Amino acid sequence: MPKPLLTKEVTVEEAKARLDDLIGEVQEQDVEVVVKQADRPVARIVRPLSAREEARRRFAARADELARRFADVPARDLETMIDRAVTEVRAQRRKGRLGA
Image (cartoon, helix red, strand yellow):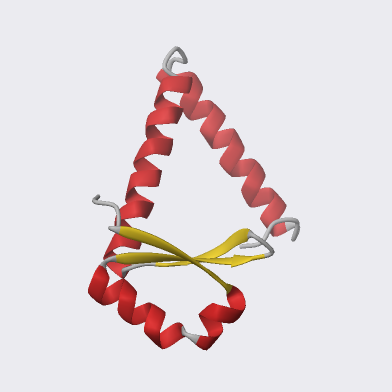
């Protein structure tokens, strides 16, 4: 996925005041806007397709990382580990310990 040509940083207050303009810049000029609060990024305004592609890229990178991490684990053992983890999460959700 090609990166935006420019990344612009704005405060939350500026984003609120200039939202229409910022959205226009994202759409027309291939700009990514990073919204910051107290010098920490809290949101990004990007083209929808770019966001979707970025999510796919992150998923693929995470899948590759997991494949490398568990490369030496036999498939049957890995499936057992996954089944146990899923069962545990489902049990915790039923008890109300995790959000759905």
